Amino acid sequence: MGKKLNLGCGEFKKEGYVNVDVNPLVKPDRLHDLDILPYPFSDGEFDLIEADHVLEHLNNVFAVMKELHRIANDGGEVIIRVPHFSRGFTHPEHKRGFDITFPYYFDPRFLGGFQGYEFKLKKMRLNWFAQPYLKKTVLPKAVYFIGNLTGVILNFLASMSPMLCSRIWCFLVGGFEEIEYTFIAVK
Image (tube, rainbow, N blue to C red):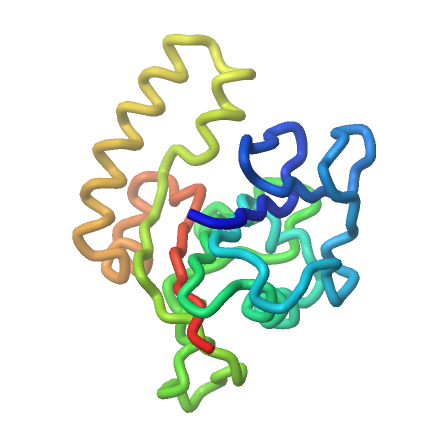
């Protein structure tokens, strides 16, 4: 795979990626406020862009998605992980939660709000136990193990029908922490 971008890396930089963050204390490869557009990258520069729990903090999600479309190459993957609305407001800086309808806005067939740039949805999944790399640093080992195991089971069941889970039974299990979208940029 070619050039890769990790937006909002925080303390979790990824090897082989251009790691971007607004906080100079985490020493990112590129210091940049993701609310300021355009980003300091060329059109079609990246084959893979990941944004792990970033969009929910930003002011204009659709403008950011348009910018990701610009800097992704044609056919490039954009992986977005964000809080599911059922548990999306557990952090004081979250501005929104997301659901299964988010990909509709990037489909030209969606008459209710197509944004003018296309992403094809490759995969969508709900995650009950999200950000294990972070939880491993704060949870006791037994709690981490039980949470992770429970998450694997619930994620499997939710993946059978994300729509049914997101709309009906997710609240029976206390909500899902995360919804993950894998998009393909279409130019």
